[in-house]
Length: 58
Image (tube, rainbow, N blue to C red; front, side, top):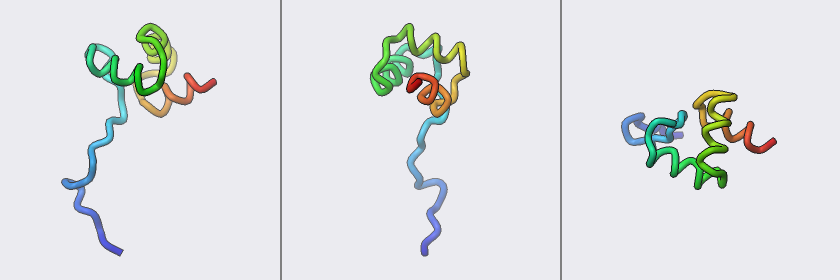
């Protein structure tokens, strides 16, 4: 088993930057929701990607 160097691991964002238009558009497209629905989800559950995705899956 090899240990992966943390500096070479892919950086996976864990939170949505709701104030950045490009980031918001990216996450809305990825989660297949409108910008407004993404904003409402973030207001309800916060900016953590996993929480937003779970909320939107309901």
